[in-house]
Image 1 (cartoon, rainbow, N blue to C red):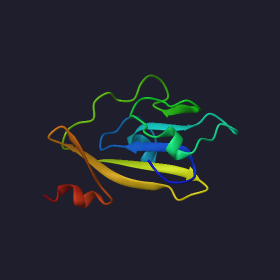
Image 2: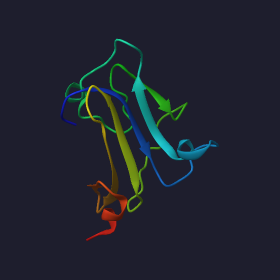
Image 3: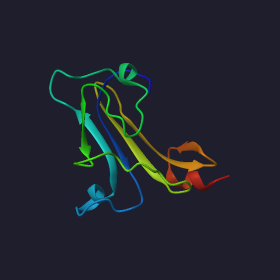
Length: 113
């Protein structure tokens, strides 16, 4: 991640139900958020963030207990949202193709050659 602003949370959503909940929450694979006020960190100071590894100053909100689902499945589509203060956050879609991550702003772009 690059840019200005403080990272407040990251949300990763996938295609498979993870919990009994309503709406998007049932499909959240991994969510981190700030531990509390005064722990803000600039996005470039936190970057890179690795899926499943909680950076200093953050806590894991989902899954509520244990680790993030360890395996993201090749060919399935996922969504990531980066939420910030003092700057625009960003979001996008990704998939794993031949062992490599492929990002796209819109999900339909992941199926294009």
